[in-house]
Image (cartoon, each protein chain N blue to C red):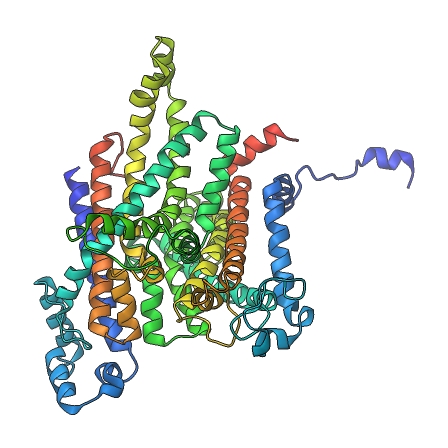
Amino acid sequence: MSIEESAETPPVTRQHRPRWLETLTLLARNPLAIAAVVVLAGLVFAALLAESIVPRDDIFTPDIANRLQAPSGEHWFGTDELGRDVFARVLAGAEVSLRVGAVAVGISLTAGVVVGLLAGYFGRWVDDTLMRVMDVLFAFPALLMAIAVLAILGAGSTNAMIAIGIVYTPIFARITRASVLSVREEVYVRAARSAGAGNVRIIVRHVLPNVTAPIIVQTSISLAFAILSEAALSFVGLGTQPPDPSWGRMLSEGRGFIEQAWWMAVFPGAAIFVTVLAFNVLGDALRDVLDPRQRSAMKGVGA
Amino acid sequence: MTGYVLRRLWQSAVVLLGVSVLVFAIMQLVPGDPIRLALGTRFDPDTYEALRARSGLDDSVPVQYVNWITSALTGDLGVSFRSGETVTSLIIERLPATLSLAGGAILVAILIAVPLGTLSALRPRSPVDWFATLSSQAGLSVPDFWLGIMFILIFAGTLGWLPSAGYTPLFEDPLGWAQHLLLPAVTAGVGSGSILTRFVRSSVLEAIGQDHVRTARAKGMRAGDVLRWHVLRNALVPFVTVGGVQLAYLLSGVVIVEYVFAYQGLGQLAFQAVQSRDYPVLQGAVLLFAVIFLVINLIVDLTYARLDPRISYRSSR
């Protein structure tokens, strides 16, 4: 390639970086967001590898001789009323919490986004019918609704996922619908329609990609609430069943020994707190970055 | 305005109808015979037949629904499978406890939110602001059942200042009522307080930026008066909405807090009903919670319409 040639045809440079990259760059500038991501990565790591890090015996097998031991070098978080290592069980509990939270939010995300897309896009009676159903679900206090669902389905972690999934569906439906309403009348949607695109194609190709920002933010916040709900349900005995280690369950067992063994209640609760806090902080940081008004302000300040 | 009120009332009625169908469905969706399940080991044929006849489970489902909803409208929510008392009397017995708790909790929330939110808005990016932001994030994330246990551990166990469980009616023993209320109210109020803190902060920040605030300052009004008359008054309008929604949430969301403190309120009643499979009581409690939630939301929306005449209701739905 000669010099003249390259001068005649200047190399094509992209003016805009991809949106997700820009989002990540802005997110990485927020120290709190980085801390949250580090904590969550650690939890996922613990969830995936708990049984390789700590011996399975420590999680499940009673060791009555070592019951109710205070925290020490050998048992960092002490031992419970059956002599099981609390640290090992907290680590293993991450798997239960994250799995139940993720599946539950997966259910509400899928159901809610579909309902919101249909209601917002088609409007009229479709909107009225779907959103009134969502209003009905929304009228019940979340935890009580989940308890009622579990009263019907029976206790257990699978049913808890379904119950939590149902409870948080309306919020996704509302958020999606609100964004769809503003996107629906955009020029590119009308252009697609006049070009002969069908409803499904317009929804999937043109509407959905433009309403993802608030949904992503809500997903992070909902994960926080789903994990909190799972812990609450397990705490009252309706969620994860023994002997599986669940933070809520461990907390309720610890409550009975609060005077002799504070560590049994303190550490599982702290684990819930830290996890929920990390998802909330991440959700907030994502909102700052994905909200267009905030975004332009941040760009003006920084690069 | 009238049109808006009517439409809002109509919407609430439709949602209420849906809520009643869903609550009714609880009994229908329970696998097996709910009365047999509820009686469990205490099963005896006479009680069984009596309960079955009273609850009308032999009628067709639509007839059952119509009977149930017409009775419910007259205040008859059926009879407990366990104790044989009417559900309405059980609810009325527990109502004062839950009202005390929700009232106490919203008071705690306001006492946290208004000073903290206002201070952090007046000094953005100051240490106070940082503290408000972090503590509201923490307050939102802390599991209330864990917080409750920690309070019990510290204030009831180690320090021995307050009782760890139970409820005393106000008129029997006002001091005992307050002592039993304090820990649950703080536990339940922290979450709402965190939400409200953020809200007060942003609405005060917005109010401070208004032209009339600048004018008031320019004409030499004292800072305290500007805050009181120009900033907080304007910030109050949206606060009523969020505060109202929080109250609705607290009235119905205290199930877990009541459970932790063995506090004999409605949430505890609903929870015990689940454990003992006392479905009429569960239905009654859930229905009541949903109605409370809807009514408060309705009142909040209508109050909002009165407080802020700038809002156009034609566009809202």
